[in-house]
Image (cartoon, rainbow, N blue to C red; front, side):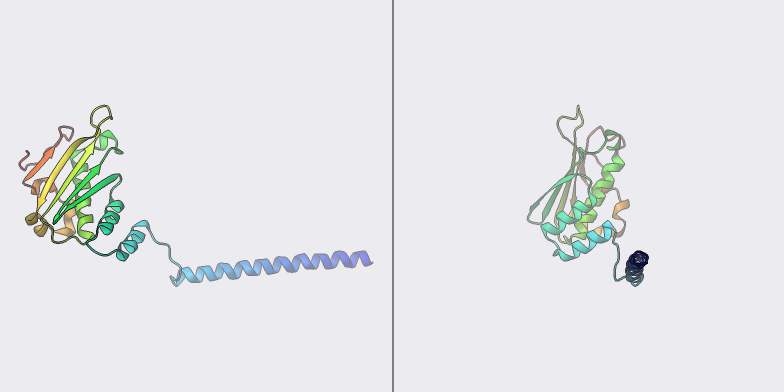
Length: 189
């Protein structure tokens, strides 16, 4: 009979421990669901996280510009400042050769200009953009596009629609490599 009581009490201990663990799991799950529903806990997207990080950086600083460019550019870039002039060089060597098209370069340059504007640089005299790609045998990088945008363009551009703009059509001077098959209407140099 004693043996039977010991088995019954051991059974009760396991049952009680299981009930406690299940209850704790349910309470914890309910607390997490409540926190998500009231947005006390919220998952953020990469774009939201980048925007929050950018807000912590002061406007019109090199750090803010580097952060904004890193958020929109797939490859590496180099920024050079000279007074009120800004030069940004983008390395497109990570792109596939089929992706190096006129439209792709226009899109990259529009993203760069958008990042410059978002970083707080407002009173610039000129912005020079250039992009390189290893055209022949993937050995040396060649400049496939370059453009300089003056103060007039920077003050008159519609920043809300910059991603749909063609910077080459608005520029007075630019250079395009023959690998970019489609050429714009503006004056090529």
